[in-house]
Image (cartoon, rainbow, N blue to C red; front, side, top):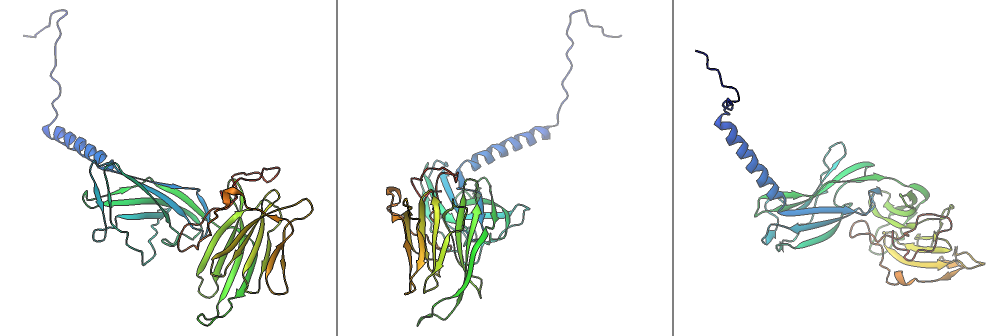
Length: 330
């Protein structure tokens, strides 16, 4: 006989039964996700760049911060083939960039609970990222006690080239300890988003070794900088970095910065370089001045050892712009 429900009576139907394996799989996935989220939060790695556009062989400084969120102290040290601090670099079309051979070992350190450390690294001597194009950069920290790598979010940079405004091939004066060699000097301009910058690159002509690619500062004049070689073939450069302000640089043939001075244009005289009969280059016209903000100016190092101070200005326009307070700031 057909069972007919009374009016107003609710007839309940049994829910479809899922197999026990479904619930077990869901629990496993949830636990795995929770574990992954917890693990990824134990060590936080972040990287920053001052800009994303560089010319070839220019020091590429990456600032890396590492924060210990594990709730306990962490011993960071190399373990077998795992370096506790490293980078992952690849081109934008996903081709990995291997580090140059002979990297130094990072000293072990202890990171206390909640502690944050920051270090600056020049990637140019560590990785062959001198070809033109885009690169993707990540910093990695390996914690042996956790058995895991912790990566920073990736950042993209572009490597390009400047416009050559001066170049000369010269010989290096011989000495008792050094054999004669040939250097190629190139002075380049490059347009960054906020200003035009002046660079110098010194390269060994035979081997191709790059001794330096210094960013000397911004260039606000439409004309080329004043450049003269002294008796030792060292480039002397005088550039217009701000209205009525000129920056003088003397660069050695091994990339060392020998001298840096700032000159102010007077009402009647504009600074200029002159080669004397003794082979020395002097700056004539104008008056030398030293703003308080650059009184303790640091020399520009070479590409191969430490970061390059960033000369230039915080202002962008090249017309009717005020004199920058710090000629060595970007």
